[in-house]
Length: 502
Image (cartoon, rainbow, N blue to C red; front, top):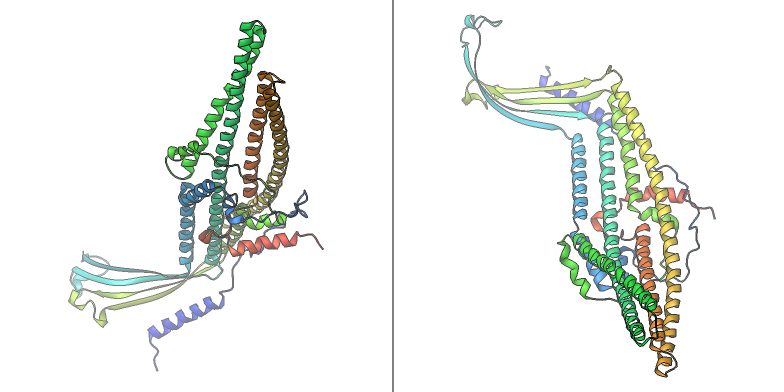
């Protein structure tokens, strides 16, 4: 019994497919599992505060209890243009990932053509001598070409692993942008409110100094004071007034910055200058374990994912050292008469298994492997650097905020003492025990204390925002921008590996 050529070709094709499937687990290059170990220490360098109230870390700005701050932060996170760019970068990374995944599928092209040609009667084929064959011919052709490269050594799989990691790094970086935007909004808003309180205290001080100058001028006219006293008070009035334009500039700059952060015209939030708000309450916040920030910090997670991508790239480069097996197939119809194009006798078909192996290339592939390994080393060092920088950032932010709280407490006591002293001065003035000038001096002391308190409180509030940012606050609950599960698992492995023994 005679076996058809078609059956033989199908058998070869089936054997090659089975061979490819059997080798599906083979992928050259290193297998990425965990990032390199980094010594994260045993805990915070300062003791954690006990009995600390809980905060909603995912929306910490709302926990601060200022409706305007909450409104601004939510509007910025919905509209900010940097966030829109970050989302577009995620979309780009996903598209490139889909392109890499397409390497597993065959490529099929459909074509059709009509060709009119004239052959030479004196050429290799003696057209003039062959009965029934004309020199002028019209050839109708319709068919397809298909090609499939079998991923025998995992080049496509490694490329897909790299693309997956790049997508996850883009997601983590987008969350980093989100955290930064929320922190910038809070910083600008709290600076604006703090500058308002500072301006009120400075204006009160100028008012008290102006009244003092008027009194000294009256004494000068009465002959009870010298011109030097008037000049001294004038100098103090001028110095106090000189600080007001700078504070007003800070106010306007903060309001304009808020408009831009909300992806609106800069003047959008100038109306905030016409309103006031109570100062936020500054209290210690829960820190958790120091290693927890490695699970929340998007820069750490992004660095870990970039390391995973660079590791997979080594496999992509290494696969070029090995043979490539591909299968090409084509089929269709060809005829000299359009009426016969779809007839069974016009069918054409071919299958061509192909093995190619780059034997000599001047060392280019091995050079690319070394370059990929160097890029992986760079990514590993960058990861370690990012982890240590994140820990340092958190420690500095914690120290700044704790010292800021201490400074606020001391300034608060100074204000209370100055307020009591001013109250005593008012009572003594009403009783006729002291002159108005002495009462005004106590009022100036109070206004100066309030001015210093406003600046100290603003500095501490900004330090609180920096601490939330350093701890990775604002990550949780971000739907599409969640930390990749495998990235978190890898970081968990590192934090557990570096945890102190109990």
